[in-house]
Image (cartoon, each protein chain N blue to C red):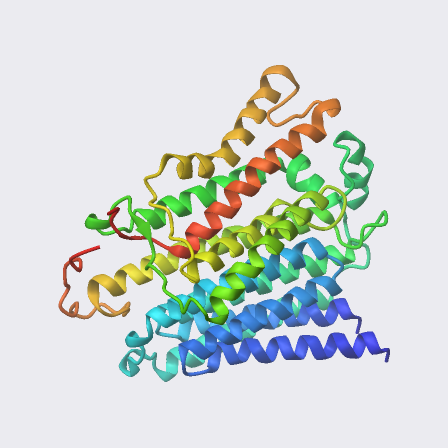
Length: 113
Length: 313
């Protein structure tokens, strides 16, 4: 089994792990981390397929590489937005629960800057 | 079995172990630390896959800045920890596990049974490198052949920052993002925040400049510049600027703005949107990249500091 295949299987398992964590973990921050794990596995699959497309002296097909670089940056900005939403929810509601129960004493903005 | 093969299997095993730790461990903070270590080791996998440009991006953005983002969020959400009653039941867990195993097995099977001849665009990219004058094939794809993707990605960054800023409470609208950091003026953090930025700025600009011909580029360089800025902010040496400042907003739109102008110029004078005339391709790309590295550094830094929390005094 070549190194590329080992990393391919590793990427597949990372996708599975991320999906499991995304579904079963009740805390939103853990869901965000799990989603990033899933994404990282998908990026690695791109890398594995790109590595097999090595040609013309380039070790890894440059087009999927560029797509992954773009993807990493977009995933980071989506994560930052998700975390900002989460922190704001915690600031407003005092908890980060996603369940549909009665909201625990929704407070207003804390005074002062 | 060669040493390289043993190393690769070991690396994959450690990465997967960290992945399992990240999902299974009880405390959120430990999970976050596990994910940062995971991100850094994944960068090593990218090096082994001969994709050094991606490895640099993964280490700088996935491991470094992403790690800071998750760690600071985990620290601020510590009080919100246990909600045991919310944990899903056994049926949900079992079906989620079955679904995940099924998907992982399908993907692994697909990887193991890939056809021997792989379609590749590498020869096309290398054959057309003359049109830009840049030797790094990844930079060529990012800045010329698939420039539309890169421009739209800049717009995504801009939308993300607008989204984050719009979460500001009324009294802090347009104010300083994040808390004002204080640190012991004689401590290690302040010392490092004075020592590292000059070196980091040089390294960031070098990585950006060398990206024309070697692994590197505006994303990786911009991430390093952003981390130097954040280091100074976290050590309390400087404050985050109020988001209503005009110069700040100008920097944020400079990258995508210049990209759009050059693209429309290609439509007006040349063949198509974002078509660079080969004679001026290199200066045009460098110009866009200079504007982009500033935009990327400012955007990544501001995404990390979060929504405005303090009004302008």
